[in-house]
Amino acid sequence: MVISHGHFDHVGDAVYIARKNKAPIVTMVELAWILGEENKDVQVIGINLSGSTEVNGIRFTAVPAYHSTGYNGKYGGAASGFVIEHNGFTLYHAGDTGGFSRTWNS
Image (cartoon, rainbow, N blue to C red; front, side, top):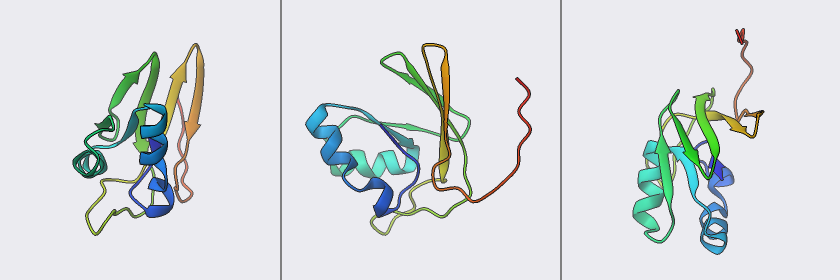
């Protein structure tokens, strides 16, 4: 599961769902610290923009999004989208980003 930024409507029930399904959460490192500190029984993996991690054969890469972020009165790290790669398929999750343009060279 990915959380794009630290707003209540994006964190929502993520911890409950992760706990119930024993699923890890991938999010920005600052939000991962907050969630991990508050929920010791949930695996939270923090990454930075342009950073990647692999979980159960699925690769997650954090990419910039343009939005604010904060959780429980603390800075929740940069807002992000995610490029998710699995079995030859690639998915772009924009998060809660405002419009922008980008030329992809691949």
